[in-house]
Image (cartoon, rainbow, N blue to C red; front, side, top):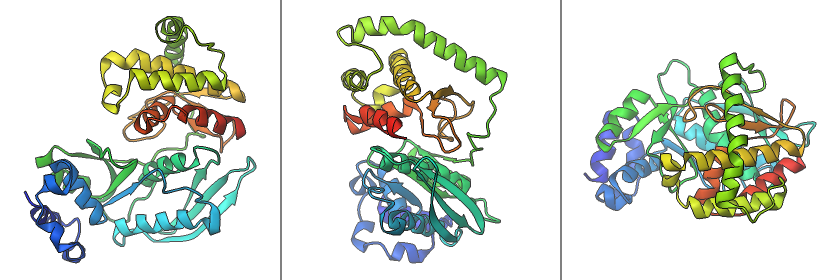
Amino acid sequence: MTVREVADRIVELGLVDTAAVSALDPRDLDYALDDFGATECLGVLLLLDDLKVRYSTDYKTFRHACEDNAWAYRTELARVAACGRGAFTFTEVELINTAEGNHLLRFRCNGQSHNWPIMHGPTENTDAQTIFCWALGELMPRDSPARWCTVTPADPYVTSEAYFGDPATLNELGGPFDLRFEPIMASPSIACHEPDSAETEHLHNWLHTQQARFPDWIATYGHQIAWDHSPESVEALGAIVLRRIPTLDDVTDPANAEFIDSASWYIGETLRLIKGGRWAYRDGDPEKFLYDGLPFVEQYGDSAHRVVPHRALRVLIKRADPHYLRQRYDAFATQ
């Protein structure tokens, strides 16, 4: 199929109007999809990006984002509004100082107040990407079935992405290309969540299993390293993970599950010990909510710094940066 044929289908489905397609470079429309993108799937996702159905970020998006009256955050909210094609109006955008020395990005969307936390430190730009693409689920238009959605398989060439449209319509478009879109649902506040007995038991069993298993993990992968929860040990663990699991495809291999769990436990336990944090767990779908379905560590306080160690490992592998986990350590230590 050509880009033009898919663009016509997108218009036919009502995801965009003809004016959006006419704004594209006409030379692009005659490309075959797998020439436009590396594959047909990626060609569709790239086209949705060009048509402003997709909101995406990369690792540079939020650098120095709090400078110049938070211009970068304002710019990104404008991009979000463009993807909404009139569904969202942002007003009263401001940065609020917190007692911990961080910020809240406060704004109104269609008159409703929102507060998104901004944690300063070495991983600020990465954390902001996560917040923007997962908290979008809070932003829902009035009187419309359209929602912000994730896609599977995701585009490996962007760090974070979300698609705006009626999920049923997006899936009608994506079906022939084996693309699956699912809504990002608005997530209840973590600070207000009280775990039930099943969540508490799951977390207890997971922590007990990892603690008991870790000596064998050391004997296999790092017997020469002092596993004393120091920043040096965290950096050493990053190098071990990159040697053992070099690609994101390896993360989903069941043969690597125990290795990843043990590495995640050590990262989280080290972060927990820095300032008396705690492990937490909330049941749910990790593909929909940032803090669901995976154990995470948080510092105390409503605006506390939080990390999902499993996700930190994915970022480490995607970046191929052995220093990334040390940066997370430093971020926790300075909050």
